[in-house]
Length: 435
Image (cartoon, rainbow, N blue to C red):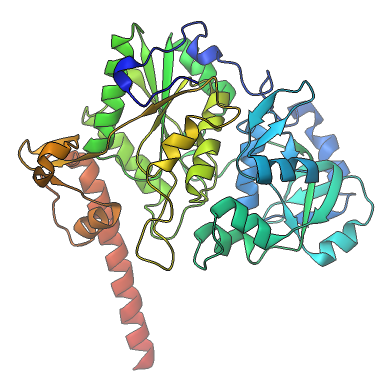
């Protein structure tokens, strides 16, 4: 992998067309059953032992089925799980290594394990009860939750959002096997058209004749500091000799913690950013990455980067504290803010991906705009955290001019105003009941 610690000396390889960068394992995994075979598979599923999966499990089915985790073909069996947990990678049959920093596993309870018995195949049903997939050639093994949590997050402190939502209440066993997904996963939330799979994204990159694709992962609204990173990346790629670099603006669409801005609001805000011309619609593709969020810092950022390889991106933007969060019980960052970009620069299995680290962007009180932080005049910069941004929006206050485009800011203000109105109505209803 190229050393990207100094952008001025960066010289990318030019032998691979961006949207044709080889997916991990050499071919994209796509696990949705052909339409002509679905009726037969459904009939078979009705005769198999069944496991009802939760909403986050369904998101992982979606991730694996579409090929984001290629070459993984289902929920991990024990050998894959141990490699992921201990080595952050999988060794393939030909001896090559692909990055796989997060275990993708399905937990089951004691009674479900007993009901499955020695059955080789298991049906998976949705939270609503409909058939989702068949898990073939299954293997059941012990779910050591403490080890999984400690190795994934580097702590077992209480208050980790994904742990509390998914792992703590999960079963004591993991079941792995190859997935056959009965039909494409849809959420019917008005956003399915944005959930482009890796194959569809590659097709779109080719349609736009991209000669470089740079991906930006985010789970927050886009402010002008983000836009500065993305527009500056395109400028740098043009300076390197690329003719048509395309931005993949790729918000995370799976599970997020309760105080994050919901996906529907973020997507509306992103649309306003394009409408207001902060980003160029001609050179930007907005799509949803269906993965759940772990907030596991340097461990998770490898997964975010690896998945974009499978989508055809050959450049990945990484900034301060990617996939990080505040420590759940102490007043500090859970991870060193610089470790994410350092880890990406040396992670096994990511050698073909060009990592583009950036300096921190902050609000320049002299220039009245978002700029890259200049330590020689640190007193001129204002850091507006996500918490501060949400406080502005919740109170109906405007941030400094130049922090975010007006259309995008109005989306956030309207969202928090709706929240406040709902809370007021609930409080009024409680008072009425008591009286």
